Every structure is written in structure tokens, then in C-alpha cells.
Image (cartoon, rainbow, N blue to C red; front, side, top):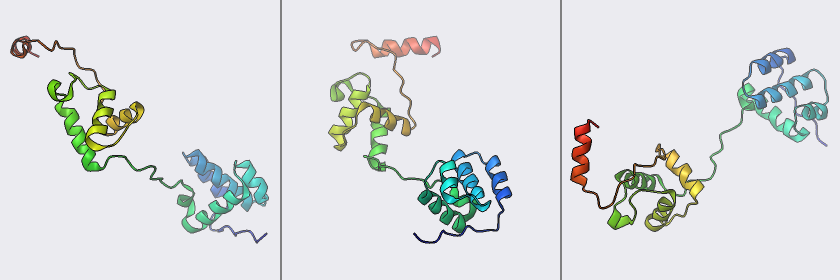
Length: 168
């Protein structure tokens, strides 16, 4: 077992506790309190356990605190899984969705999530489940709203005239 990594001493335990009280992120606050406990003489094992981590994790946070200060105790942004469609494909997909379905070409009068999943598979070779498609629609800054039903054999000119006459 090697020697413990020394904690920088430019901040005292009391000031770390004050920072922890003002911190909005609970995880950062727990890390600050664990560091303050170590500076006050608590064993690293006990300080880590009181903060809900193991000794090795506390060591990693000590290293980050020594390098970057309190900002080093914040969680790093994780990139996550890359999107299935490229940005260009997403823009083309959004344009098709905004244009709306064509009854002859798409076989539907209004988009449903299952229709969008099918269209993404056919046009871009990317398969989505319904929940994933809902997330994609939301990420494209679109809301899922059902349109008013319309009769496929209705006279579009008469409908337009009625809407204009009513002021809508």
C-alpha cells in the first residue's frame, strides 16, 4: 500500500465546509465535506465512507482537487452515445416532417410515431423504437401534436374558403 496523496492546504477545513454549505450540487458538497474531514484528521477510509464513496474514489477526487481546486470536484460532461442520424440527416428528416405527409407518397394523412420510425428506416437506414423517435422529435424542437381530423375526400377549396371567412 502506497503513501496517501497529500491534499493541498491553501484552503482550510472550515472554508471547505463553508463552500460545501453554499454549493448547489449535492455531489460536489459531499466531496468537499469528505476533503474537510480528511484535513481535520479523520482517516481517509472513514471520510470516504461518510461521503458515500470508497477510499480509491476519494483519492481520485483529491488528485482532481489538487489540480483544479473546487471546479475539479464537479462531474465532467459525458458525451453519451452518438446519435444514429447525422446532423444533415436530422435536418432532412425535420424538413420532411414539417412538410407533412403526402397521402399518395407516404400512404398516411398525418404523421404518427410508427410512421416516422418507418420513414427513418426507409429513407436513412436507421431504425428507431417509438420512445427513441419521441426523443428525436423533441430534440428537433418539435412538439407532438395531433392535427384536426380531415376527411380525405373533402373539397380543399371549400375548407380554405370557410376558414378564411371565419377569420381563422
